[in-house]
Amino acid sequence: MTNLNLKHLLTLALILLTIATKGTTCTSSTTRVKGIYWLENPIFPPSSIDTKLFTHIFYAFVIPNNLTYKLEEPNGSTTIAKSLTIFTNTFKTKNPPIKTLLSIGGAGSNSTLFSFIASNPTARATFINSTIEVARTFGFDGIDFDWEFPQTTNEMNNLGELFFQWRNAISAESVTTSRPPILLTAAVYFAAEFFLSGEPRAYPVQSINDNLDWVNVMSYDLHGSFNNKTGAPAGMFDPKTNISVVSGLFSWIRSGAMPEKLVMGMPLYAKTWTLQDPNLHGIGDPSVGSGPGMDGAMAYFQVLDFNKQPGAKVVHDVNTGSVYSYNGNTWIGYDDPFTVSIKTGFAQAINLRGYFFWVAGLDTSDWKISSQASKAWKLV
Ligand SMILES: *[C@@H]1O[C@H](CO)[C@@H](O)[C@H](O)[C@H]1NC(C)=O
Ligand SMILES: *[C@@H]1O[C@H](CO)[C@@H](O)[C@H](O)[C@H]1NC(C)=O
Ligand SMILES: *[C@@H]1O[C@H](CO)[C@@H](O)[C@H](O)[C@H]1NC(C)=O
Ligand SMILES: *[C@@H]1O[C@H](CO)[C@@H](O)[C@H](O)[C@H]1NC(C)=O
Ligand SMILES: *[C@@H]1O[C@H](CO)[C@@H](O)[C@H](O)[C@H]1NC(C)=O
Ligand SMILES: *[C@@H]1O[C@H](CO)[C@@H](O)[C@H](O)[C@H]1NC(C)=O
Image (cartoon, rainbow, N blue to C red; front, side, top):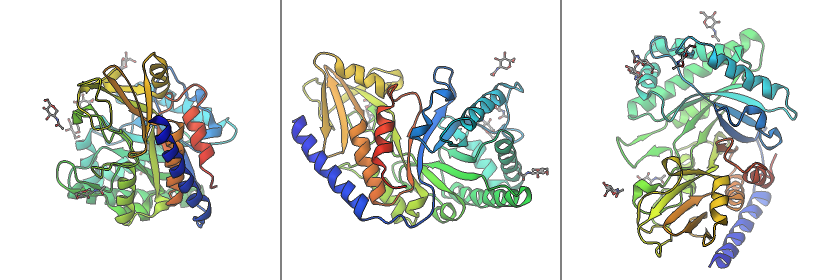
């Protein structure tokens, strides 16, 4: 079973890589992106990151104060300042050099606050000013905005206006200081429209094309134990629904996003499930909750340990372009060097700007997935 699927997957990979090398002309002079987020933590310091494998590193996260709308340490201590300084200093002295971006927001951040900042001209101007000041003070090359997520069409319109004002301020600062403009990016949903829950709403694609350097498309967390059945968390395809990496990226392109403004996200972590019946262990089989790992998530290096246990089976699934493993009633969906090669081949075939990973510290200590992605990305 595994071998057959592997053969199919290999064929697919070859097709995609052929398209990628023959069919694309890298017309623009835009820099390619091999990105990775680093989440503030003491175990995996910035100095652990192998900069040969990446072009851009995102510091996650800082948030604006909810009364002043400026980026600052809420507690008035210097903890964040210290951490930002260590981060940018680390990469200033690394060879090859690598660009640093300061990421604002994150999954747990205050969506109401972002909604207000985006809608109120005074708060918005204060916020924008502070982000540029902080980025320059600490020597970042760019700013990344991670609002998860605008809830209404109105908020999406305000997000478009925020990007427009942000770009104006960045251009003006660049002129005044005679320095290259700082980069402006945003992390966005896997699809250009929200169609699964809440008010249907679409990203302000025109403003993104006009004002951002690119968006980081969060093409992961597509399935989880909340579905009550197994699924590929970052599957390229989904034969039954359009909740997949490829559907999401195509929805961005359909909605008018320039491919060179799109950077595909890939997880360095797995999602885990507990199977209802250990004998039903395919994709879409019933589950009764999450499996091992905090919140049902596991680092890739932990999955490799799981896979070494007696009885564990690994399956490359051609229908979803994903890999999973299982043992007893535990089921794990993830990406490995092989699926990542196929994804990066696909991303090149449709002329995307690059890819990024969430998050540093979850790959193997010798960077198996990250090295494979970097190797597979053939275009400069
Ligand atoms: C601001 O944020 C802090 C820290 O999260 C919180 O304790 C406080 O209640 C918030 N204040 C307002 C006015 O929202
Ligand atoms: C605030 O600062 C104090 C003193 O530096 C420290 O003990 C405390 O842990 C900090 N609290 C937060 C939430 O950062
Ligand atoms: C989020 O921000 C809003 C607007 O500033 C504020 O009213 C609310 O208290 C904040 N929530 C938290 C949890 O800080
Ligand atoms: C931020 O505002 C201050 C005060 O008005 C101004 O001096 C500074 O140039 C502004 N910075 C940017 C980056 O716009
Ligand atoms: C999953 O099962 C729980 C508990 O039975 C139920 O509340 C929930 O609605 C189910 N979720 C889906 C997506 O079917
Ligand atoms: C998926 O299908 C739904 C229903 O047809 C549609 O509303 C949505 O826009 C589609 N999304 C993507 C990402 O293609």
